[in-house]
Image (tube, rainbow, N blue to C red; front, side, top):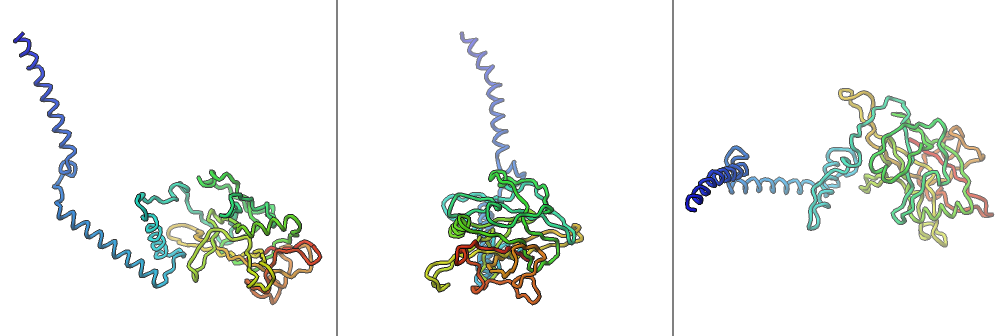
Length: 341
């Protein structure tokens, strides 16, 4: 029995020695000195690096806060404005107990999207999207509204849907507007639409519930922005409500935006690419009651408040607002839609 015990112990020793060598090798791989191939930084060095990072962050915060006090622009496409917007976004994300790692939403919604190059006078596809409101969960299609229809020869380009468009499940449709690269366009009438009865009451409800129209140009959403008020918001409202104290009437009045002023921003760099790239798409809606003497409206129709000789610039003027109400004897409201670029 004694001999057997000695043989068993002798056989265990090589196995135990092999396991010990594996443990030592594993711990050596995990050690910072072996992984970095150099000396581990001391506590004082780590403290100095951390202090330097904190000082840089404080200096950056002071710089951005000073820019805000000086009224720096936050909505344009400049490098400074983009940095200021990024700072504001980081400041919001870092509030709270849990801080998530910042990840750009574009990497999720727009995978692999590349900019398009256009040549001078080329027709740009401009599509209409949904009409929706934050006050209700019911969206509508653009052509459910009493608006002008898109022409048959409208520019329609097959575009790849991003994740957001697929999840929303809507189909983009051509708009009734025509925009060409680098070409300005003065006030241009599109059509006349008669709105009365149930349709007029429904449109008034949409304006009261603050519905907004969303359209895009070269996959860029239209924005309403103001450098004076320092804001930018996606889409434009169908209309607005004016209080009785503003209009002088007995009750609040609803008005419709029937004229759109589009602004398209371009970027050219012959050393990098040919043609022009679209970098911005803005809109300024106007409510105006166009004066017409005919029921048939085309782009060539002369309108005294739009494109006739001597016509003034189309602006928001309380004296010419287009009120959403029928005539004195109940006749339908006639709306002339127009736009300019």
